[in-house]
Image 1 (cartoon, rainbow, N blue to C red):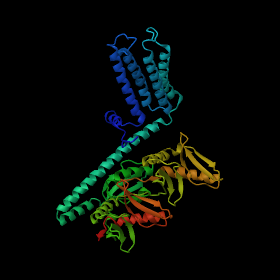
Image 2: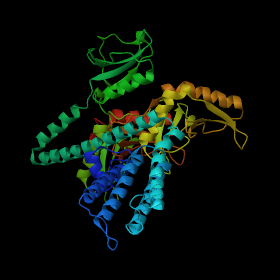
Image 3: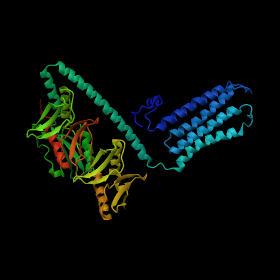
Image 4: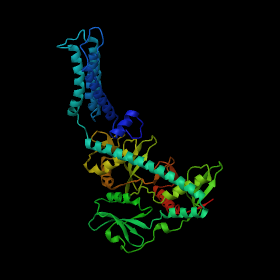
Length: 515
């Protein structure tokens, strides 16, 4: 259950007063229990002033006993429903309430004429006891008969869900604040002189001109480290600690890179290859652009833009039309702001791609830099976060998992990896002629998966994909999901699409606007 869902007053009250629920049953169980407490209290308070029942009329005592009996059922059933038990425990709780309610109604029919003061009515009492027993057994027996598989993992996943949802809400709030600030800046710019507006734009662009670069390397102790070095040779920041895996060092670097606004990453294989700390270098951002952003009006009366190299080649375009010249200008400014720091998946020699299929489900695949798919998720996920967590589980636990190599109906050999719940979490995606070839594929996956990079999304990211005709293309997608730029043309290979991205990252931020 996500925080974005509108579930009514009861859910909102629980979320604001108790906490963010992880399941619907957690909220239902709370309200069932609270209602039972109220009814039980009311029943007891009504019983105190009640008098002996008369044989010919409905009495206060009869009502108080009925209300208290129903309240007791709900007080016991509420915690059972709220606990993270198997679904049939909840069914037992609901069934027990129904049985007990029937007994309470039966009590109204027999009381007081057929009700024995000393012993009561045995059928009514037995039926009510069966209702209580159903609720109690559902809550007590279910944990004894069932094993809550990977309970710690489930709790961690739920906590990660909540953190991801909070992060998404904060990201959306940041976007709205940025949009508000942008509109405010535009209003101020309209009122100000043209020269002052141009100066403000130049100052904004200067914030994204990096004068440093990241260096990723393996030290003499065979631990992976990173450092951020200014062009004058000074070390601005360093990892401070070593990482046992290159993959973890990249993660640490990525968490800092968002504050380095466009700094490039320069990997070194071994410590001796590193330049001396005092050695200076020229950052790539200092180079002048060899391209121009063309702003034009198409035949349909819509405004569009494209990035054209001086040699006439179209490097990329906006992909959609805009109603006015000012709107397309704002779109160009957003692209120039985001295109430099935007990252894309780097194959070294493999990488995990998290993508959305034609059915709208999120999947992952482990791709070699030669284009071969070594493994895929085997199933789809409703959210990107779930697919990312599946990748993390594969990377951290692959050494402890058992692969199954089997022969399919077509006589090809395949492999698959199943979780503790017997669900397929990864498979080969393709068949092999021999069992040995499939086993070799398993060894490659075991070797590559722990160190493979996963695309990290910042303000915007480049996506490389294959279109229906088999050409490779790229698009720049903002974190809000909007596509702000695309390649415009297809490339014969994935490496060609990567080269196109690098060309755009190099030329777009400083390209002049024409038209």
